[in-house]
Amino acid sequence: MNYSEVKNMLYNYKYLKIKLNDINLILNSNIDIGIDKEKLRSIKPIIENKLQIINNAIDVLDPKEKELVDYIFFNKGKNRHFAIKNNIDESTVGRRKRKIINKLTTLITQ
Image (cartoon, rainbow, N blue to C red):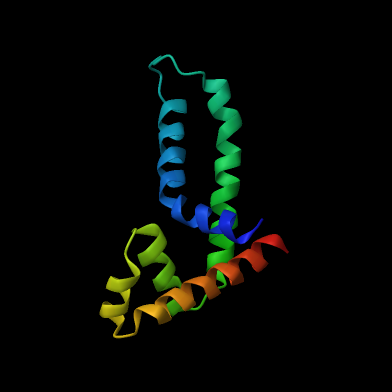
């Protein structure tokens, strides 16, 4: 997995969690809504695996790195707002973000 793929996984993390929740609701429902449940059953472990990969890698980050990941990627915050909130320069946020993505890329590809 490369830098861009890891970055995209981080940006899509919340979407994956929502999608997994929707799949679980549909699979546990007795109502037929015209969706192929077998296809959902085959997709579910793929999504769970992606989420677990992200969770395992993020667990290794220090609290400040986790805070940045949560703010920028999971909550779609802006570098500028994070910089103001933490009283740091916006370019510092960009460098930290790149460093974190590189660190996660290394962890995920090991």
